[in-house]
Length: 196
View 1 (cartoon, rainbow, N blue to C red):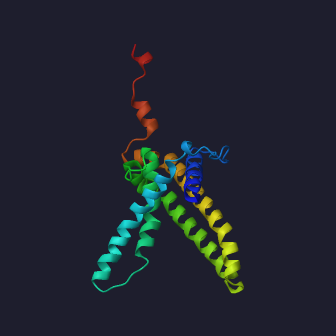
View 2 (cartoon, rainbow, N blue to C red):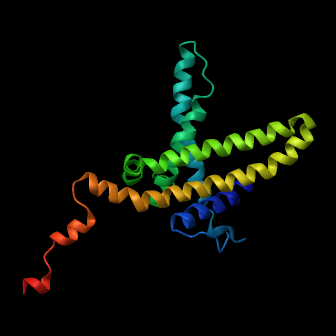
View 3 (cartoon, helix red, strand yellow):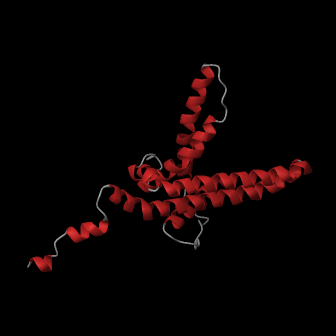
């Protein structure tokens, strides 16, 4: 139940932030049927992002190499792409979206900034937990709970900002790479009034 409601809140943060909103005005209500599909977006995105790394780890294990961190690396890099693809397609099962994948190189500065900020966020959260660890398991649990929630919301806020950045900059750079800007296209079109 926590994951279901937290998923609905996380997707709301992503959608509102991607739309340019700086403040969330309405959070999901108690009516479960208004947001019962939202957990599927996160669940399928997590599974699809985790599986390639798990497959690589399994293949390496067959060769006698143990690399436990491969699935987490796969999850770290693929999850944003997969989740934004599902949101762009408006379907939890549509895990691939060409505009989102294309934005990885048309708006690479945004993606690079997102991953750097995410690493800094995780490192900061890890250092907080390590700082309270000498106090015992009780303090670790007491601190870990609010830290996890804070990291959860900041991560999806960053993901929403990434989606906003890609929408603002990705298409313009893609048009520039194609050799024609949107303004040049409008100039090339003949004005109907002038044609008369």
